[in-house]
Length: 216
Image (cartoon, rainbow, N blue to C red; front, top):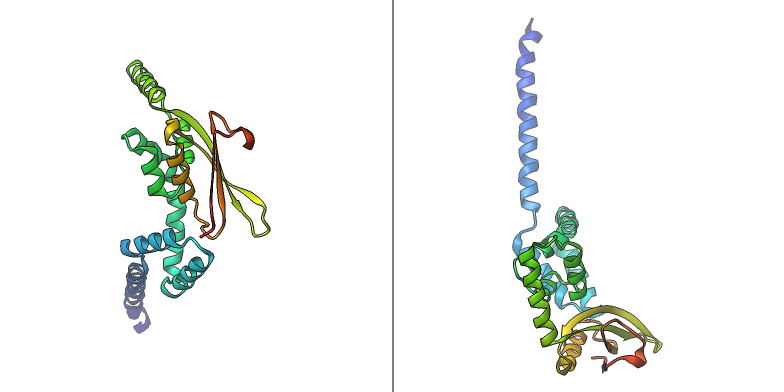
């Protein structure tokens, strides 16, 4: 008889303990959740860590500062962002953001941004077609399409392909374009070179512009 009277109380105690455990898990999850400041700091540190030594220092710092729960959350968030990146690029391009700004914000190349925009380009209306035709005529008047390839020199002296892309530019600004692209390649501890072709990429000897950057 006494055992039957204790059963409802025991069930209530078990339910209460379950609720308390769930609450403790939620509190722990909140405490372990990475803040916006943490993410911004990690992104900035990664951007400026361009040498092997700097990246090794960053890796050690992350090991010390980031908990297992934070690392798991950030990794899953990064995968989610990766899935949504093409849509973000298409949205920003539709809003008028230029390719260089999009590429810089996402840490990707302008050629990747251009490819995503081409793949996500909606079927234009007649007005949009006329507008783009006018923009194309203006672009032809202002500059031309140039393809480029950047190589970096390995420790044994071998040149290795690092990056390919294309940009619209006026012939008189090729030096500035090449300088900007070389500056953004990273691997500053290695010698780098760039070849630029008008139109599609061709043989090195047919490049209309060539420049090199010494290891720093």
